Image (cartoon, rainbow, N blue to C red):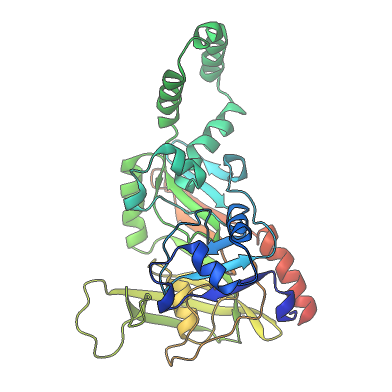
Length: 362
């Protein structure tokens, strides 16, 4: 697409020597011409990602498995509630267009973090109640209008509340908009995502997903020209190189082993790349990314999975701004009414612009 020196970022695969080092030290070692002040500034100005995730902590410890991107320009600020587009909502479900650059849910070990730290990089599950509150405030019912009038009448009283009391009231108010994620998208994957509005609905949808009664189709741009095919493999947490992947032949029984099935078909040839449709039959972590990479058709912009089952590594010269994977279609029956629901979402702006340039260069 363009020469390496015109790439918008530098990519660093860390090594054994980086284990236990800080992120700042690892970058400084590779950017020897920089001062420590320049290194710190690059991190604080949102120019550094670790494994595809924006990182603002120069003291973060890194490992030899980490992949660091150093961008020439600052990345966008963390996603705000206003960036979350709600495409469908009722008393039971919410369907949203997930922006790239945001984690779907909080990792278990992070759920006890203080609110201030969570707010630095909120998850979609945490932002959605705020987005729903704004959505319903713009379309108030008669009851909600009366409640709003009551709030205006007591504004003077509220002004005397302490900051702690105001936060407590806000937390209670947002509980009515709480959601439960019933599936997940990777941080840098954009597209349609489904949430339940009650735990009981989440359980019902979980059963529907396990029965493979939800249609999920992704669009991806990959290296090479794959044919229509089905990947049906067993994935494990460590395939032998510290990464998730297909279980090697002869490996002893692994408790993390899970069957993963992905159907793909080509949509468009773009020079040395292809756009493909990927339909999930199962929903394992990084399933599409692993299947494509191991087949020799790595995603453009893939930060982690860069080798085939034969061990061959793929060099990514596509200059994709992130992994070129997008949840484009979501179809299911409503768990309460049995009504068929169908949603489509086109490529978001960042990948649309990149694709336009890629087609010109093809």
